[in-house]
Image (tube, rainbow over all chains, first blue to last red):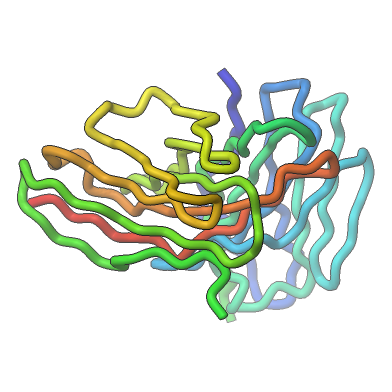
Length: 112
Length: 114
């Protein structure tokens, strides 16, 4: 059974701080990893994707992948109240018809 | 232009009824999905179709019947609705390729069974 684990939170951070969201996955064969943001009452939207070990930066967001530890993280620098949402981690394969396995999400609350 | 669109957005119906949710994508993707998100926000795959062919069926009750008339459409029909079917149903699409499989979601259909 493929599983993706996340702490449900809520993770509370003050505005301007760094928010750190973590995720572990059980399927060692997973090759692609994604972070989605979901606002209440809305659909998940893609924030970051990462396929190789190390860091990948995009604006205020940095995704980190450690395949040996089966660990993925998302750092949000200079957190804003508008970042308050549930963040979903997902893992999948690079090829074939496999779909993504999602974690249950971590709720992030950024206070002004 | 909406990339993945699904209708209706809200649906309230009585137990035992049959209902359908329609989905269309204009991204040119070859794979479409139905995901269910329950009250605890857990997003779980139900079905996956690639070029109109069923690829994944994740032990969903046979009251749920997907239908893909072409690769741009994937509809979901639900027979004999039960209270436990109340959830948000997300249609999604992707292009299967070797460099990852990014999934794009529709806006969701909120189903309430009373």
